[in-house]
Image (cartoon, rainbow, N blue to C red; front, side, top):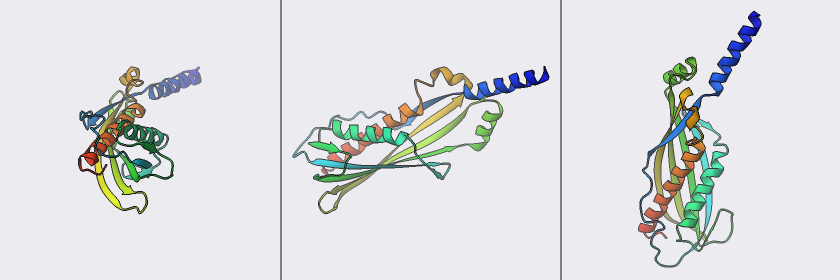
Length: 198
């Protein structure tokens, strides 16, 4: 009988940890509110995008995982929707411009509050802050001559608490961070367009 009670307690403990919800909120930048697509002028070049990504967790390198695919799709979508290019491709090939885009995500948290949340089975919340930076380098395709570089950044916060479970599907990190990457790419395109790069 004592083993059964002990097993039920462990099962309840495991259920509490598994049932912890998370909600990600965008803290920067505000939603892009410029003209979209930008008002085009001049010829529309073809572009090849080289999209890479990396991540760190409290300063330690880690694999970005499957979110890198979502970031790449958000980046490619921003370039396609800009209407500034006659063709956008993420595959190597012939083009007028070569654009290198690096997406970096740096996650950090307060270790004390994270430990406290674990000890209380997430009755007390903890938060992870993610700084996202998009660096864009535009070069000519034939000689690789640099035409322009820009870096823009944003931030999200992911809150973990047991009471947030019902809200988790609505604002999971997998849906919020690609939207931030999309808007950061729109900012980059708009700024480079205003400089006359394309």
